Amino acid sequence: MLSISPCPNDTFMFDAMLNGRIDTEGLVFDVSYRDIEELNRGVLSAQPDVSKISCAVLPAITQHYRLLSCGAALGRGNGPLLVRRRGESSPIRRIAVPGIYTTANALIERLFPEIAERVPMLFSQIAEAVERGEFDAGVLIHEGRFVYGRRNLELVADLGVEWEKQTSLPLPLGGIVMRRELPTELFDRVERVLRRSIEFAFANPMVSRDYVKQHAQELEDDVIDKHISLFVNDYSLNLGKEGVLAIEQLVGLSDV
Image 1: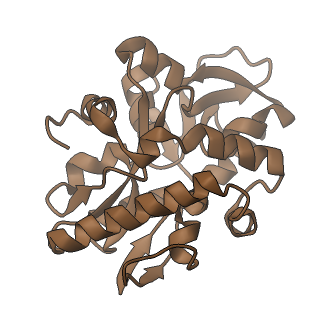
Image 2: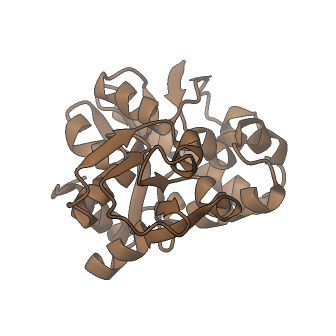
């Protein structure tokens, strides 16, 4: 049995393989859904066999984990959003980020180096904390990027847009990794099964809806649909050369 730790936002891709909708080639999974920063910390201590990660954490875990060519959250127009309270004009000095090891935090460090104080907190609590005035601004990920307009918040910058201006590459947010010590045959099998699961999801988009809603922060169908269409795409099936190049550009590695 393989221990596997996806993010709750990965349910669309993982539903078919975890709920018996496809051939899993004999694989059995012990599943534990976790917040993205919990996942990053988990691989830093080499806990799960298979895990979702932020691409930014790759340099710290390459000794123990290999990146799968499928299952990535990578694309264009999908960036984390830097937001602040509507109408504020004072300098942004202290912001909330969804984890020190997240790609969102790495983008702030790269794109806004003048913002020195970055406080990690659970991604689903950031919008409310910024609205209360606890921070000058905050970085929203996942469903939060679609619903911040319902609050007294306004956009400062789309970090994906800024990344694309600098690099002309799609933004690599997250990927799926597997422990290096496991057999190559098993790695290949997991990759095949996950790709098959994603292909099933694309072909049968409504089959997983109940499962997705069990784990979603925002339950409205239109928000779920927007999230899936933005973060699950052709790169999720195969990173390809451009996807690999984007990750290498983000993390400063020559071979991911």
